Figure 1 (cartoon, one colour):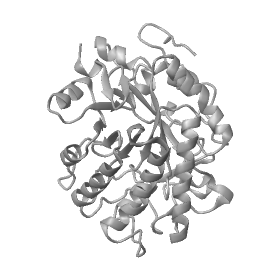
Figure 2 (figure 1 turned 120 degrees about the vertical axis):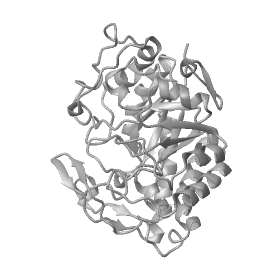
Figure 3 (figure 1 turned 180 degrees about the vertical axis):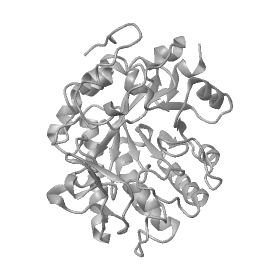
Length: 367
């Protein structure tokens, strides 16, 4: 038995194993941000993970950056998530909701009334936005006014409350992948001169206000946070000028909230595990007082090695979970992993989403 596949105690949660299903944007929700009925099957099939982290979920209409992604700001969205959490629990699983605001990684086509996306500063990202009418180049965002920022903090608070109503076991704050919170953290994307820009303390002010709002709802032991100090994706975003100082200060401040875990993308998202010299994941692991979840192109062998060396406590798998609903059993038996063509990753219906077979046929689960 691999130690990765043995039970693990995470805070007050007993997990079946150290395998985490990473958040996977799949763009199957309705125009109103409501998960489809077949999302129940998708998540229940994957309840073999010790912990599921849901696909990134928008906290407000302004937060949306991609077409057909789910939300958690309306009663209808809450009701749409309830069967998902119930099915995961019926299969002895645990599921956290990832709270998301994309900031400048968006497009007017997916924003309310065609408005410009918002950001800490009016800096245009590179790359393309996924809209209902296809891929379109990102546009220059609008810099948020100082007095708008507390309202976004309240959006996070409401989203955290709604996640509790929907039956989730906790929430993960998405402060990674160059979305809004990380746009404030990095001095490459935050050029503000008010109390939310300039010094490290000021750049962390908004993300930490979000953490406080969310932990006020859940308590720290049911809240995790995702970070990605080394990634440039999406938007070809430059790194912070001093990631060790910035993210070291971030971790030290986060320790004051007694968070359950930090979930780190070790390398460049969807590309490589290579880490530049100016980023130190060992520092994050050593300084953070909670559990550490490693992420990015993990195999069972790499996870076992990192666990033995004390580099991480849990390990999240993303793309392998797309085509392998029985991933844990495949890891346990050494069976080969199926691969999902990229055409199935984003958009569409149940095909290529909740209809992948296991090694021995359909994956059986309870509703």
